[in-house]
Image: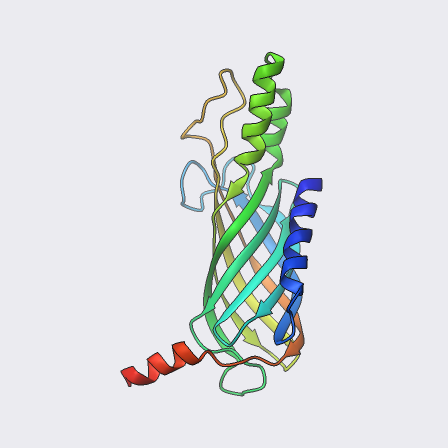
Length: 217
C-alpha cells in the first residue's frame, strides 16, 4: 500500500505543476471485481467489492486531459495515471458543451491483496524468494483502459459514470515453481460514478482537432 501511495503522489505532483488552464478533483464510488479467467466481467469466487478513491484531472483543452488518482477496496489498491480524450468538446462555461463520452489509457499499478497473500506465503531458497519478490512487484504494472461519460451539472460541479479495465500479468504463487497460470483471474474491472469539483474552468479549444472537423463539413 505504501508503494501505491508514493506512486500516486508523484502523479499528482507532475499534474499539478502547470495546472493553470482547467482542472478539477473529485471522488470515485463504485464496485470492483476480478474476472473469472477472461476479459468478460464474470466475477470469481471473491465476488464484487465496494471501492472508492479520488482523482485529480488537468484539462489541456476541451478535448484532451490527463488524470491521476487512486482506487482502493478490501481486495485491491489501484494507482493510475491516464490520458483522456473527449469525443465531444467539454467546457462548463458554454451551455452546448457540458456533456461528453470519453476514453482513456495510460499506466496503472494494481496490487491484488489476495495475490499478495499467496506471494507472502510462497516458500523457497533466499535466491528464489528475491526473484519472486522482484517479479511480483514488477508484474503489478498494468495498461489500463477507461470509458465513461461526464456531465457538467454546474460551472463548478461535474458528475459521470465510468468503467475501468485492468489486465494483470501476475504469476501463480500458490504452488511451486510459481509459474504463470492462464487460468488465474488476472483481469480486474471497476465501475462506478465520479463526482468532481471544478477549481478552474478556463479551457482552451483544440485548434487542430476542431479545424479538421470543419474541413469535413
